[in-house]
Image (cartoon, rainbow, N blue to C red; front, side):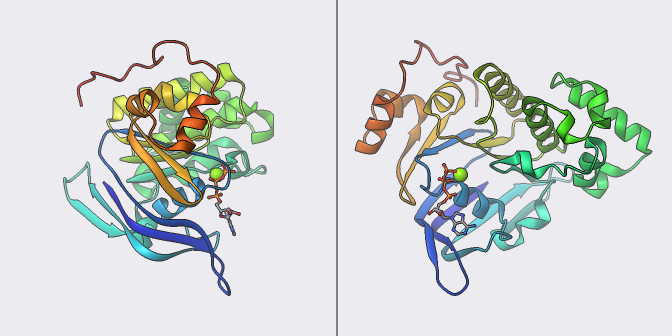
Length: 274
Ligand SMILES: Nc1ncnc2c1ncn2[C@@H]1O[C@H](COP(=O)(O)OP(=O)(O)OP(=O)(O)O)[C@@H](O)[C@H]1O
Ligand SMILES: [Mg+2]
């Protein structure tokens, strides 16, 4: 679905601050890929590059990122370089950026924000119908319809985060990129939201790329894990294998620093049909 080929990504127009250094990775259909690594290792930068969001001054200096999506409506194959991904936003791909509390506009009610984010095709029909569909969808996230009439500050952090996950999934994209979607939340809410994301991924059979510095989260839900260190990928493989047999010193230390993981992976994806 996404092929990242030796990309070097950074910021700046005068100078160039390198943040991702010669990374290659392919992201396939119907999988949950985790990205872990210490702060500043380039996780968010890689996600922005994969989403094709150049608004932060991000620049791909070397290498290429290409996408290949099969349109679910007409079966047409869409192939594009990342510079053209913006055409696929909220359609083939959606993105929950890090620190996404700030993504919601404080001056707009939730309903207006959801509707604004939708592609035109989803806005067809009457506004009342659309509201009904959105409300039904939010109900699946344990959110009441009244959430639609609230301003962001009237919701709890966990509710806002569920709204964002719901918006990202509502359009049934093939690829959802989520950058630390639950980090600011308490463990119980965090777990609920992560389980929802897994449930959505299974139901839509799409691909979820989940960035988290929390290896416990990866242990629980990802199929494949990518470990970044100083802008490079130092290790990648099936999550269970990396936990059982970490190769790189950095990964070994990360795993050693974890509080003991309780026995089995709590969302056991092993042995599941592809
Ligand atoms: N908008 C920006 N402009 C300039 N430099 C940036 C920008 N965003 C990130 N960087 C730099 O790029 C490098 C990688 O940052 P990035 O945000 O990708 O790390 P991260 O792995 O997501 O860290 P964290 O776990 O703290 O979210 C850092 O050195 C950072 O200072
Ligand atoms: Mg980050």
